[in-house]
Image 1 (cartoon, rainbow, N blue to C red):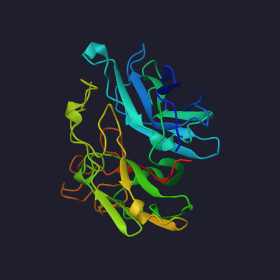
Image 2 (cartoon, rainbow, N blue to C red):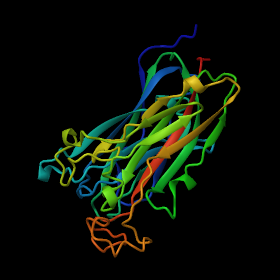
Image 3 (cartoon, rainbow, N blue to C red):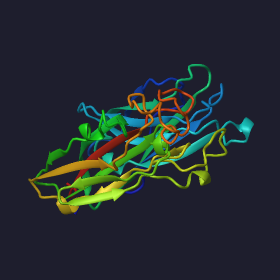
Length: 328
């Protein structure tokens, strides 16, 4: 059978990169050679306050692989903490790790990574980010060899019947190779927006569902453990649960085994659904201003989006189909 050495290989990546504006920072790094064999891969990330201080707000962030083939894949998602400066008793920095084993075959040779944080500070405050990768030598039971982007929707408007999510969540049919023996769907999804009906989508409890062939997987993206986050204390409202995320933590993807629907050389049709919902507290709802207060509970009579707590409900969704074969 196939053999490989033991031990680990470390690839340094971003080194104390300063981010304080919502522009992606791209850099090319040298990963292990294609012929090296690995069992697993982990991405390590540290976020810390720069000398000018932390960005005081929780922000969406991601790391993507801009592969030399021309394809781009999200390989990690996180939400920055509120201020974690030592002046408020915060830790000053927080470490996270991400399982990037499904992308091992792509993290080879010269590859470009893109680091993004939705910060809009623009002064001396922000975040300082370092990233490295650790590859564990060995031969996996099955190896990921292909990643197919299914849905990558950065602001999927939720609850507006004039812009239904079903217009954007189009079913995808993927052709499978003869060597395909297993598959999984990896979903990264976070809910954003507040001050709406049911305080959606950041603070509302709504199911999501992946359909793959004849099987379905339905769950509710929710983090109820934010108050026990070790990246704390923070200078903000970090303890309540949220739709798929906590301030100051990585976003843990949902991996759905769809191997039962694999037919080598065949195809698989995949769909994505979210629990039906209407947000009545929105600018294009004529009855919003006339409501008795049950619609715009938090901002009675204020139907427009603004930056003091009433923002459009939306989901940030990234879903990929990962195909596996016997190690070659």
